[in-house]
Every structure is written in C-alpha cells, then in structure tokens.
Image 1 (spheres, helix red, strand yellow):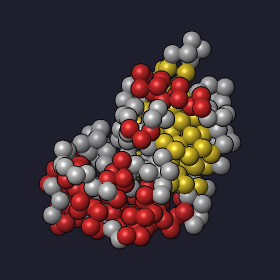
Image 2 (tube, helix red, strand yellow):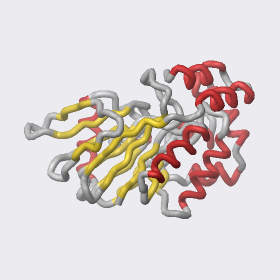
Image 3 (cartoon, one colour):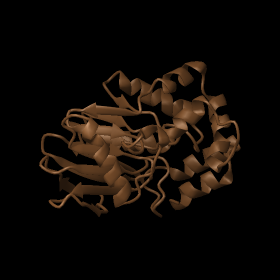
Image 4 (tube, helix red, strand yellow):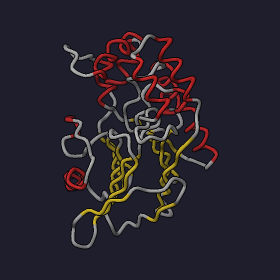
Length: 250
C-alpha cells in the first residue's frame, strides 16, 4: 500500500491541497495525517473540513499539540504560537473542537507506528531533533508489537534514522524524490517534515510517501502558492511573522 504521510499543515489550505494533488498523482492509496492540522495559518476550518472528508476514504488522523491548544487554549500566553490558539479556537465550531479532541496521539498500522512528536510520552510533545531523542522514541516502541517503522512530525524537518548493527542510530537527510529502501530487518524512524510551514529555508511544502509492499520511503517537496497563504494570514490579522516565514521558508 502507498501511504501518503502528511504532518504540520498548520491551517495552510494552499499547501495541503498542493500536497494532496501531488500524492494522488503518484497513486497514493491512503492518507495519514500526523497532527497539527491547525495553528499559525489562516484557514483552520477549511483544513479540518478537508481532512475530515478524507477520513471517509480511510484516512488516519492524529492529534498534534496545536490541535490540542485549539480545543483548549492555554490560560497564559508564553509563546507566539500560544497567541494564535485563541484565534483558531474562535474560527472553529464546537463540532470541530469535539472532533479534534477525540483524535488519538498514536496509531499503529501493520508494522508502522504513527505519532506527532515522540513515542516516548507522546503527550509531552517531545521534539525528535537528534539521535538521542530518536533513540528514546524508537526504544519506546518496545511496548508495541511488531513495529519496525516510526513516523512523526512536529520538528518541521525531513530526517531519517535507522538502527545499525551495533544498536546506535544513524541519521541522514534525504533528497526529495529519491525512493529509499527501508527494509524490515532494521528499525526506522522518520520525521516527515511540514506541509504548511517549512523551516529549512525552502518554501516548498513537505510530505512523504511510504510504499509498504516495496519497503520504500520517498520524501517530497511540492510547490504551492505560498504568497496566497501569506496574504490570507495578513488579511486575518494574525502576526506578520507567520506570513513572512512562509515567504522565506523559515
């Protein structure tokens, strides 16, 4: 099965639609959304509605930290991300809140385990930025049966880790569009990047395609109308920072 893996959409409907079209053109058979559907961007309702519709086709959806904040905004604002939670909460209906609130934090599909942040205490939203954090996350799969692959988001970067023969994790940054063999005899962990808010200096949206039958993982970068997404943020009256970062990929 060809699984299209998408994370950190952040209410960017332009980027989401571009990635969905790109994945469909490559015969994606199922979509998996790894959390943070909302937050930062101008179109939370449109994004949630689009993803909810895809669940009728069998899409799997996880909860991210910004989804949780949209349901229950923090009592005090500590970060610029917190500041948009109240705005996002008001854009969504009670039905949207209920749907987001019931989303799981982890899901297993065959040999793959999906999570927004780390498998190690997923409710703490730990960032998997390096080999140490990736090791902790992968080690936490001991409580799950037959897991060989962990896929997550949260860090807005595309990275692949695998466990070598000496149990130490190896890390490398994949090239877009190159199918990588990920055989089942190893353990793998990947952060698949961000659909709606790339932060690596490249404005193109990110997602990945996992072919479970061939045991191949392909990371993609997709052009989208980031100018329209940035303009929508400005029209909504959200912080200029969120619009500008889409224009520079930071």
